[in-house]
Image 1 (cartoon, one colour):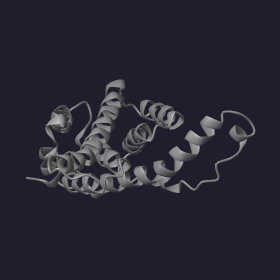
Image 2 (cartoon, rainbow, N blue to C red; image 1 turned 30 degrees about the horizontal axis):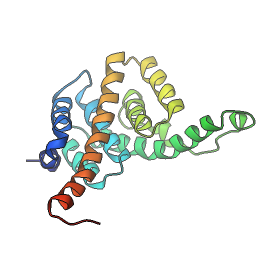
Image 3 (cartoon, rainbow, N blue to C red; image 1 turned 90 degrees about the vertical axis):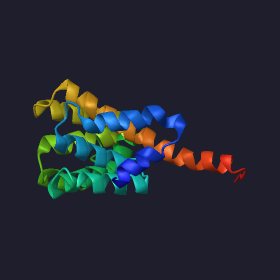
Image 4 (cartoon, rainbow, N blue to C red; image 1 turned 180 degrees about the horizontal axis):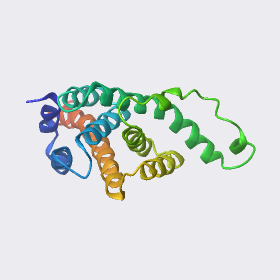
Length: 185
């Protein structure tokens, strides 16, 4: 049994729906295997739950190439930077900020290892987790221009949502265990 499956099985009863959703989405959707596992890994990293990210990376290695894994990791890293910047600019909402150049290096975007569509899809999922409306819109536009469907966009968002929910459930299960043992922090 993979570490990811062990984490899924360890989810508390309160997370029964998430446990089922994770199993279902990883078993198949409109996404290719590369898109599924790349999006899953990028999403797991974006949740900032180290055990979930490691387990997802280990599981992904069984299904996809090192290039897909590298792109998923790079997408999560770049979006961690970009989502903060563009979400912040969006919140400011007025000049002169909108006309100021980002001046943030993003050369990795031009050096995609798998496919540009995959990378954009991974970035879309991370941007959704990080609540960056501007980036979500940009990446949806990017993936649709590259031939991906509305269903694939939808499934990438579902994957991101499930991984965020699983990460929160794993953290909350620690609280449930503490509560069950009669200890408190």
